[in-house]
Length: 357
Image (cartoon, rainbow, N blue to C red):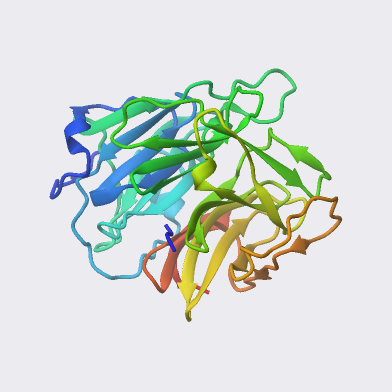
């Protein structure tokens, strides 16, 4: 199983990431920062949907920072203090653990509307919230062709051009919407970057809606092997769970995902990870309405495809983790623990370490 700038901070380079020869020192001009993913040796990928660009940034953060829990109460206030604003001006869009160091990185928007992007990290050794300097750093970038350009009355926004990313075996997988006929898109971009293509269009059957969909964006996904075959496990609004073979994600392809579960209507998935506990594999998904759902993977290979309208839930079963509430982001910290961002706008947010359920 594969599971997966606005203030100064000191980042000491201790190792060069794979493909470092392709990086050029400079200042990445981010227009937004909504999705993060890590490659090897502290290489950070930043999704910028407003700029229709993905940046690869050498953080220089490849030295293990220890094995402490990561606990920061009122992290939105600490982020705001670091950026010189108030907590109400801060939105944390993504949280990812750097596997090379164990430090935790945050994609943040400051201000209302499109706002201004910033990257921060939580130092695992000290618990300090630090700004990630983006001046004179080694980086590379690649443009996303045909990003989603919403017309008046259309569903979705430009931010839906990049809804999630994951780095798998030398390729960066990017989910989002495009301006193609099959708007729902998965791209697989080799790293080091050269260029990208228009990706593969994704079609699914949405049981809760009772129809085939090609426009709905993937809201959360994670890589997972089913019978030793690489898949993307993807979740959409209202909440179908879909398996997509990685081998079919070729440029320009039209790929039909297989819906194996309907986990409940009137809900939006936020984040998803895969993990192993007591010798069994699970997916864990945070959601706006259904809380945190734990999904056993045992039946992923044999599950019958859902191809008719569903009024409630169907297919692979999920268990609600009732002691985890208001979880907006989650990521594995190690083989037994994860980091979660929990809270509500106006009430504050905490970043903390909890056992994998």
